[in-house]
Image: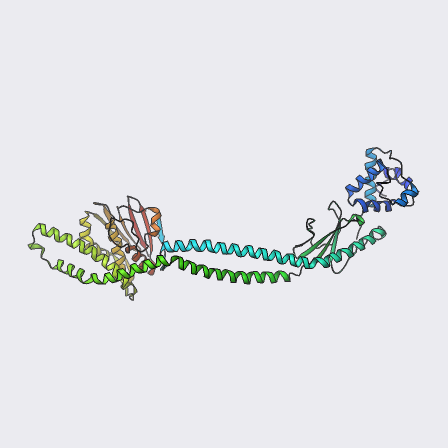
Length: 99
Length: 395
């Protein structure tokens, strides 16, 4: 069983909404990686977008944004947001996965 | 102050050697520094040239690798196999210089230079605009075969040594020019002494022979005193004459080494100088044990004569002259004017005199030095100004 249990904030607050989108969380992660490169930059970029969603700062393509629209401002607390983004990074990061 | 001398017949005077040593030290230091600086500049230039030659191919590898990363980024994480190439090894770093993955053999990576060499490896750092897999920096590594470096060291050592020896010879030539005036004046003085010494022999022999033949018993006291003074003067000139003869004519003669009873020789020389000792009202302390040495008697006599003569000449009136003889040691000491500490190393130089009120050419100790060097005898000079000087010979 994964250390990230079904009760964690990422699975409760992020996955349900993203399941309906045409781009997976993995693909979105790679889009962010292309723009921000490092862990610190990427986490800061995601948090900023979730707090102040805007087409101008979205890492996704215009086509994607036009198709699915811009999400609403996050309702998560700062701590919940930090935890969720940390889990997101740990789940999809490239480090230690390449062989 | 105590100064020891060891073996070594010196063709240069100490003052000449000192000047030569200072000049050559400064000169050689400058030459070595110049060669080192030029070599360092040459090495760096050649290294830059080699890196510049490598740059084009490494840039091509980085471009190929970036394309492969792009593909891997697209298929990640269905494919996780990092792209490899037999021509080079590589690593990828994010914008915070965190290593994402590395196959480098040398993990010491620098991001402040585009291309550099470290421990037999060449690294090329390529910065990306699109961060595939988060990659900001691609490091391409190839092995440095070191052939260029071997060639450079060969050139540096070859040309460096060549240049060094060329300038060293040039420096010796300069030093010779530099010392020539000093050397010329010594040669001139030598020649003058040689010529004049030759002319002293007949009159001096005649004076000494006639003094000895005179019958002092029939003389009145006044004339006897006058004769005594004449004897002192003649003997003083005689010692000087013997020194000069030795210096200019006899020192090149072949040695007639024999076992010498030093005690006997010292006694006879004291007897010879007795009249001089009395003229200065000197007391003498003799503490002589049996001792012998295998050398030319003529030369040992010159050494002893000069040591005794100096101890008399530079002694105070009513002072003391001491001679101690042990199996392997002869000490001659006086209660005279002494010599300044800093001048002691130069007292054996020819034509060096430290007291203008006394006569002589300043050749006595130079002769002593030459002889003791030849026979591997050590000399120690212990002197205190206004207290006296002690000369110790050890063999």
